[in-house]
Amino acid sequence: MIEVRGVSKSFGDNQVLKSISFEVKEGEVVVLIGPSGSGKSTLLRCINYLEDFQAGEILVDGAAVGYNASAGGSKRTRQSETEIARLRTKAGMVFQNYNLFPHKTAIQNIMMGPVLVNGVSKAEAREHAQALLAKVGLADKANHFPSQLSGGQQQRVAIARALAMRPKVMLFDEVTSALDPELVDEVLKTLRDLSTEGMTMIIVTHEMQFARDVADRLLFFYQGSIIEDGPPNDVFANPKTERFQAFVKRFQSGTVAA
Ligand SMILES: Nc1ncnc2c1ncn2[C@@H]1O[C@H](COP(=O)(O)OP(=O)(O)OP(=O)(O)O)[C@@H](O)[C@H]1O
Ligand SMILES: [Mg+2]
Image (cartoon, rainbow, N blue to C red):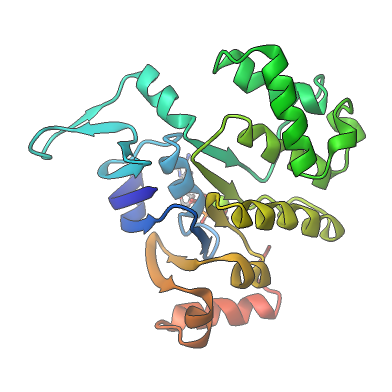
């Protein structure tokens, strides 16, 4: 469902992604962990083409993102903005800061994309939005404004808003990091439910226990490279690198910011 092949990206002289390659199969949940600045968010942004990359290719559901390879595969040509916009709807992305529109209710926030971007009728969008609110446990909050919702509830509305576009894959970037500890679990439950339903997902998180429970595969990022890749229990039991061991140890002693 997602194929990342030899993707490299630099900001000026700073190479942030160093020929990254991996695949995510349909229904698979891949968790990315790694130190601050190791390139996790940049990679997610490249998958949604919110960020350009200089080498390699990314395919979502079989379609190239950002560039079309020429027949021989040697030359890359940038896709048109329309093509990029259409492909972008294949991947739903949710960030740490949920950024709901403050003057729209929960259900209006969820309906906007389908109505304005996908040309869905208001009635159909409303029905789907209501079902999504029920799915994230907020059926009774449809007419609340963001300011009338807790952080965890707002984040769940943001997830429903991304799902409303009927994405093929979901990308989550530290969606619980800005939440008070007691609100983290309700958002993680939503992610667990999505995984049970078979949604293909890449999740960047510092929630180690959650990663171990939910991930089919764990990728450990270090300075723009993937240096561990495997089922979480294998990676935790038999890490190949000292970097990973050190990361987990530092993490457990609480010196890595969540
Ligand atoms: N727009 C930008 N311009 C220049 N450098 C950037 C930009 N965005 C990110 N970087 C750099 O790219 C590197 C990787 O950043 P990225 O945000 O991907 O890390 P991360 O693994 O998500 O870290 P964190 O855990 O702190 O979120 C960092 O060195 C960062 O300074
Ligand atoms: Mg990040």
